[in-house]
Length: 342
Length: 225
Image (cartoon, rainbow over all chains, first blue to last red; front, side, top):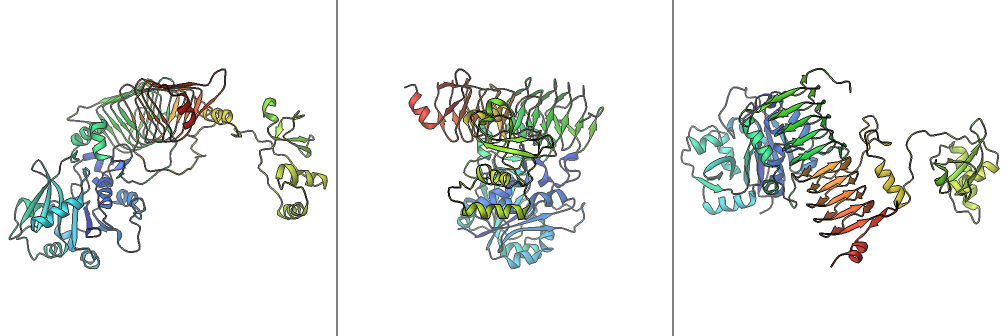
C-alpha cells in the first residue's frame, strides 16, 4: 500500500477566518500548540501514511508558509524523486469555491501528470488530528465509490481520497457536474459521482475562528486530549529552532500549561500556551491565553483569554482580557503600553 | 582560578609583560593560580617544527601541556599568556559538572544561556513543548522540551523528555535526558544519569556537600522493596 497516494494540501482556503492572526500569513502558517504551525499536522499525517509526494496549493500571502516548509527537510520530503511541491495560485482572493478548488489544480496539471501515484489524499491546512490515511484509502477501495470524504459524527472534516485520474478529469471540468471543488462535489452538485463517507474517531480540532483556536489550544493542554494528537511513535514534525531550556525564576508560578523552550518566566502562568522565547515579567498573571513566539510581557500585567501573536511587546501594568467566545487578539509585532528597555 | 582547584590544571608563571616563564602540569603545590585553559594559538611554522621534534622524542606523551609547551620554553621561544576573564569551568569531575549546571541558574547567572549574541547551538530533537501540571511547583530552574512535570522542582536543571511524578521533589540537582521519575520521590544534591527509571518512593541525597551520582546500579542497590 505504500506510495499509492500523493498528498495534496489546500492551503489556500479559509485564508481570513482567523482575523488578525491570518492578516499576514496563510492559515496553515498560524502557530499552534506551542511550537507547531497548523499545516504540520496534515503534513506529518501524510508522511506517516507513507506519502512521499506532497503538493501544497497556496495563495498570497504565503511567504510565512513557504519559509516554514523550506525544502521539506523536516518532513523527510527533500527528495530527488517525489518530495514537497509548493504550488502558488494566481486566482484572485475574492473567488471562493470551497475546499479543493478544481481551478487551482488545473493551474498545476503538470504535477498530476508527472507523479506516478494512482490515488490522491486531499487535506486542508487547519484541521488538527491524527488521520490514518492508509485506513481511509483501504475503506475507499472497499467502498468502490469515486470519492471518500472523512467525517466525524457526520460532520465533514475537509479531507478526501480519490483516484488521481478522476481528480484530473474534475480539474479539467470533465465531470462532477457544475461543481468547482471537492467541497461542492460533496455538498452541492456531484453529477454521476458516488461519494463514500469515512468516520474518524479521535480528537479532531478544526481551527476556523479565533474562538475555535483558543478553545482547542487550551483543550490540548490536557494530557487526555494531547495524547490523541501527539503520538510518541508518530511525532508531529515541524521546523526545528535552537533555543535554551525554559528558565523559571524564584517567584514563577506555572500551572496546567504548555511551555516551549527559550521562555523566561518570572510571573504566573495558568492554563495557557507559551511559544518559544516568550518573556513573562515579575508580578504578571497570564490565564487561559496563548502567547506566540518571542513576545515580551513586562511586569504586573494581567492577560486573560488573550491570543497574542508573535513579536509583541507589552509594557508594565497593562490589563487585557477577552472571553472564551470572544478572545482578545493582539496583532503580530504590536506594541502595547510604554516600551521596556530590554 | 581558585587556589583550591589550581592543582587540577596546567599552571603558568609569567613576568609582568605576560610572557610565560615557566609551566607546570597539574602541580601538587601550585605556585601560581594562572591556569592553562588548554586553548592555544600558534604560529604554524613554529608548531609544525615542535610537533615534528616531539614525534621523534622517545618517552613523550605527545601532550600540549606536558610536552610541547615545556619544549618551546626550553628553546626560548616567545610564549605569551592571554588572561581570560569570562566564565570558564573544566567539568572533569561529577562535582564540577554539577557546579557548572548550578552556575546557569539565578537572576544573573555566571554563564547565561539566554545571551543573544552568544547563542549555544546543539542538536535540537523534535519534541513537543513541556507540560507543567496543575500540581507542579517550579522555582529557579531550567527545564527542557518534552518534559512532563507533576512534582516540585527547585534550583535544578532538567534535560529533555524527563517525567517527574506527583508529590516528588527535586532539589539542587541535575536530571539528564530521558529520566523517568515516579511519585513521592525525593532527590537532592545529585546528578541523575540519562535514561534511568527512578521508582515511586525513592529517596537519594548527596550528604555533607557531596554530589551524589545516581546511576541505574545505584537505584537497583538502594531501591526500597
